[in-house]
Image (cartoon, rainbow, N blue to C red; front, side):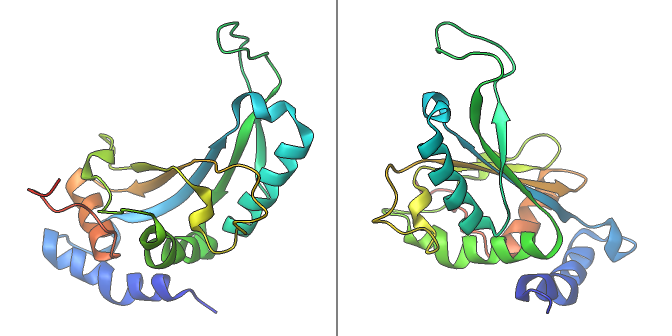
Length: 184
């Protein structure tokens, strides 16, 4: 079964973006390539129990087993050692990507305390959007009681587009809650 957001993208959003930007065909418009979730653990990465707990939480959130990332360099000030565990990451593509986006926008983001919207400053020069979440427990899949510590997540949405404006328009049509200009 195709995800609801994927169906909406191909039937309504893609043609709307084509006409909005005056493109020759729908395939020239922006589209989401992949979503990368990253959870940095720092010094907690060496504790097997904490690592396992975070791995289970991230697997529940994404529906996919995360990869354990390692430090590339030893840095004495940060108490890191080359080759030790740094954190976890998951790359979502195709149907899982659309399902995650749908849950993120409609369920998880509204659950953030004092949420006013996402900043529109998270776009890089290629049109990719990056933002952070301070509490991973906003996802309903994660049990608040079972979580030993509230951890943050970095989310990168990789978009194939010609510029930032095209990417912004795509995410806006997917109901991303951006802060309106003039609001704080």
